[in-house]
Length: 303
Image (cartoon, rainbow, N blue to C red; front, side, top):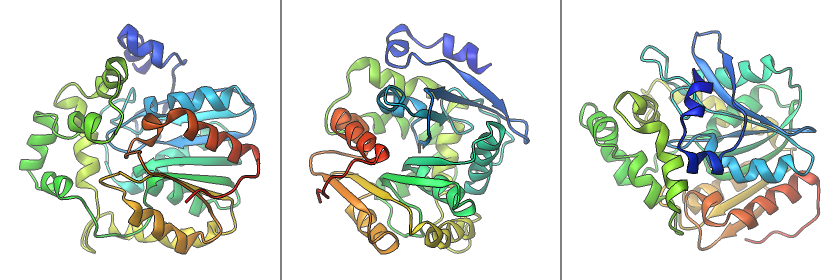
């Protein structure tokens, strides 16, 4: 199914995203789409909401040309993965899904690049397998309990109303294509971000990611996120690089600074003019930063 969906991508989107499609049937019955490009040390890239593997397309090109193997899944309900009604759309399930994929591929060691929800998912996975993690790149993300949430996102967490806005009116993925960047996307790129989320049924994961934000102890994913946060201690000796867009309205510099307490020796680069989709606002420089870090090049912090 996913290969068929990929073949139906608009031509201009395929030019931006020219990769071969791969699929994996998870133990829970859902089918995950993923990219597997290049050869060499594995870099696992995890997207957030409301993006998909398309977000990492430029980084995949850079790294695969420089001797890395890029594994980039679409979380279930996102991108070219299938969008089941009965799937358990929770943080715990997301972590398990990615773990099942890397086990299926026989990957024993990997570096991580994570963005948005990918931070909690990826750090949750790495906290369970600290010996498997080699390096960690954090892009405008979080992996700890926090009550900070933009009003515009809190407003669409309201049951029924929020679902109607997000799934019926495309009131999350649609605005994000403008609000998450400071440099306007060209039409083909904007189309690529939005193509998988064109209908009510297509936007099931977009809504469930918002619904799964755990702001209080009674939330079903709160204890999972606490576990992710506790697991960061096992990663404290890993090479970590924080790359941040300072104009992000969601994962603000507050989140960047909180990571200092978990990874005090981490490298840091803050791009003052970039927003949440930092890989779109300054794709060339940020991709080069990540490549050099993963290659082991020495360079100074640029806070």
